[in-house]
Amino acid sequence: MTANFLQSDRLSPSEAERLTASLTKQQHYWVGLLSATIAAMVIVIVGAALKERIGAVPPLFRHPLFLEISWAAVVCFIAASVSFVLVKMLGLFEGMLTLHRLRGELVINSAKREAAEKIAVLQKEAELTTPLVPADYGRVVQPH
Image (tube, rainbow, N blue to C red; front, side):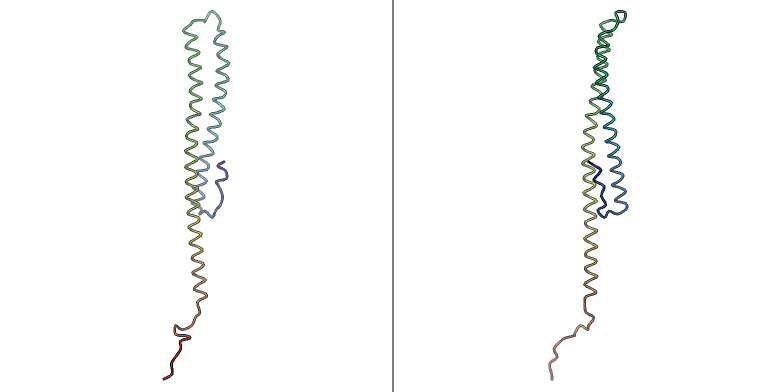
């Protein structure tokens, strides 16, 4: 989604560098979010599998406190990983809005530059088309 933000639109070199840096930062955020989501999914799957393993602990290690703490640790780890992904998603939305504001600012600056260039060209054309004649050329002179 953010890849199409990078279009030339007559950006200055510094504006293009600024936009590229912001897009790179956003892409890194996407990769981090994807990695965190995959890790959370693996943790949920492994945690669900551990539930069966913890319940099948050999009698030698079976103690009610051990089972409760073990399962609570697994649940806490699952909840923490899922919560981390959800919090990262909130940051993603803010990052996309910031990138959109930057893109809007750069497009407006580009449009202003283009309008100023058009005005300069029109002024230059007006200067060239002005006839080079004296100011009183064509004036009607009344005989005395």
